[in-house]
Image (cartoon, rainbow, N blue to C red; front, side):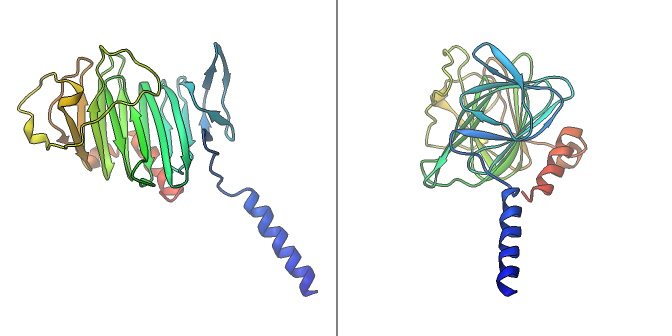
Length: 246
């Protein structure tokens, strides 16, 4: 009788584990949630994504009106995308204590809940047409407008932002070398344009950093987090993070 009971418990637990939270394989992202029409575009063709699908990197994704998408990348971090967002999943690799995640947002709104770096050589970037952003253990939002202006807002932790020159030919997956020396925002007297080698900023919790299509920027400035939490997109993301225990 005990043996039967043991087998019953074993199979019950095994069955339950089959439906537990599963991370994607290296080189893929798991579609964890889809609302509305979300298209995966590959080699001139497109198809609608659904929960449970896996996206092989590199891949382009477009969200239509009234749509949302939640992805789980190989290190367990979460990326969410709002309506009318277009992005490319450039890389999605995590193994042996390292990760190399890169997403390029061409247009729209992205929320990132990122786990801490797995190793010194790890990289996690959510980039815009004019900025390169590296992160570690943080929550932040990237918004890219039609004219390619970019806004970063940090809700937890901090991000490292550098300039991606518009004039430089964009090559998907290309790494832009960021200066190792980090200067505080006080070194910027006013809006101006500088090269990639001249600046990189740390944007901390409660601060936002805006970059124009021409590469002009001001120092990071605080934003009203309480007011921002009333935004429907922000509110939904905070709710989802709570549900997932992030």
